[in-house]
Length: 309
Image (tube, rainbow, N blue to C red; front, side, top):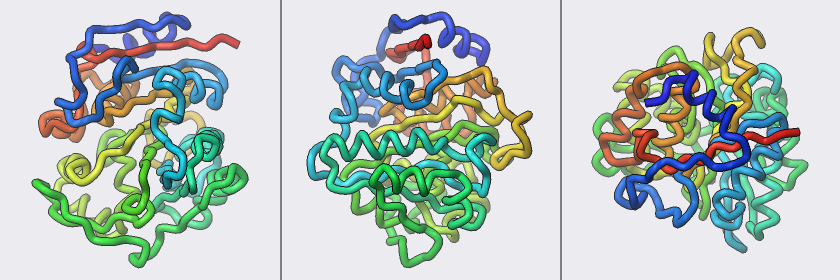
């Protein structure tokens, strides 16, 4: 498997031409929707987050491949911390705003943005820059700080969790887009796409995760629902002191990548290599073994793009 150096290096040298590896076959067998001729995973390296997002979506046929006219879309960024964008503790607001614009442009009837934050929710929404950017783009920015925003759902076959309270914006949406930032996490080892889904459940359930096998709980929620699209902000990953970070010295500013995949396990397996892990992080391994996606990067159809100024 690719090491961090290998993975980043390939992103650097691939140029604008796709580097395609043999595919295992149907994603349906791995628990994800079929993608036709689209790649299983695309990584884009560049200098402009918005241009990188646009280029990555092109590989899947544009946002219209995911969002149809009249559908309700929910976008789940990481807004966990009362930190400004330059510290990369949260998803960058430019990515969230561009997604809102694209979804509305595709005919979405409404686009909602929320996160169940760790720091005080209204301060995190404001300081991250996400609330203002999303509203300016036309989104409904929803709170998530009270139990009244959640409904009980069953986790069929869940190992550590059997029932959780999930935010109504997710339950009532037609399209679910997961948009975390990549960073170190003291408890879960890494926050990427799977860990970001802890922000769709209630505070009580978040606490329960930590008492009942964090990695297994992170994987279990996929038995209920997987996002339709995962977009990982790996522009400047937080390599230490996560998930909140201390200073910009915690960041690797050389990475400058955006990853997109329908397969939440595949994108997290790739993210773990960027973070320097030679083997899968435990919740990625558990999810792959449970059939929620694929973690062998050598068997995925990966398109690597380098954008030039």
